[in-house]
Length: 107
Length: 122
Image (cartoon, rainbow over all chains, first blue to last red):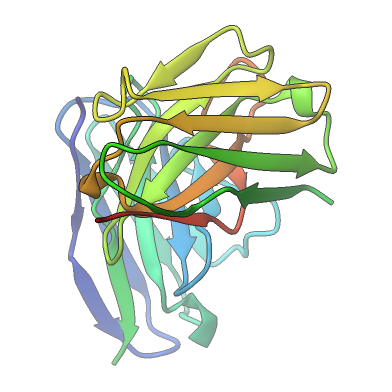
């Protein structure tokens, strides 16, 4: 199975700063990588699909890039509501796999 | 408005069975593949199973294969996850979720239910 490794595990930043989260795949997933945001007690929310496409209603400050095995989620100008856990997911091959999650916390 | 509402979670003993349901509304149910994803307490997300729009194709994680059965009733807009031979490691919040792309592509997942907690313990 394809293992996704997210880094850093925790990122501490202040509102207004830029966040960069990484997701590395154990083998190529082409561009079939998605990002989800999850807040405590809530279900995940789709942010980015197929590397760089924002889901409906997702603000432009969220962007995704990468291909193959290395992917990045960038949040430009952090808002207070952006502090959450972020998960990457690949759909290139069965079984579908998620990264272990990365926590974005307020500094 | 798309809505997914899971039910059926609860406390069950190891080796026991449980059936989860997910009632869907607000979209053409048969036109979308659906999935179950679970999250153990304090842990990350784990994909469990996916089903095509017609129900003719199903996929399972190795950790549940042979024990869980994913089905759907398109006349009732409802998903079912039959879970047998439950183990302590199956303890998690179980989410049902809809495929963004529709029937033939199973991920990513654009709408999620609120989740139902399954606890396997004696």
